[in-house]
Amino acid sequence: MPVPAIVPNLKSEFTMTSPLYNASVPVMLQMLRALSDVLKKAEDHATQKSIDPNALLQARLFPDMFPLIRQVQIASDFSKGIASRLAGAEVPSWPDTEVSFADLQALLAKALAHLESFKAEQFDLSESREIVLRPGTPKEKKLTASAYLLHYGLPQFFFHVTTAYAILRHNGIEIGKRDYMGAY
Image (tube, rainbow, N blue to C red; front, side, top):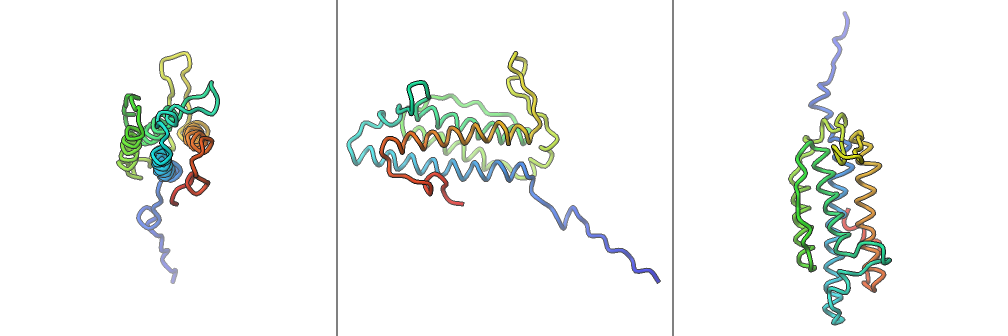
């Protein structure tokens, strides 16, 4: 007598979180939290050493690069854009009006809250999504969701987070790799 085949219900027994969710939201949460901590150390350093905070906020690695404040804004912009596009949600528009460490902390808190608002399930169909950058312009570019995340979005995000860290380290803030990485 043949033994009946037992086929597991793959959908319920082996559910996996979207790889694009795993490679984006948790990673950006970790890095933005670490950036927030690094900015707090920079603000504390400025206070302890009687340094005008604006000297750090406007610091650059080289004259043709953006200052610290803009690096943080762009990192926040990429985090919200990456998560929103991959989840098929509208990318919120936030004005870049920050001028102080407190403003940057508020911006990072807003970016973190935005990232935390996404559920992994929202990314389930992201693999088949087409991401269109600069739609309707001569610079329009169409990418698969994975190409967008891995070859454009995350490299841009990490560039600006890293540059913010480098600006502060270059200006004497006592931070290291553990500060850059944050908790994982």
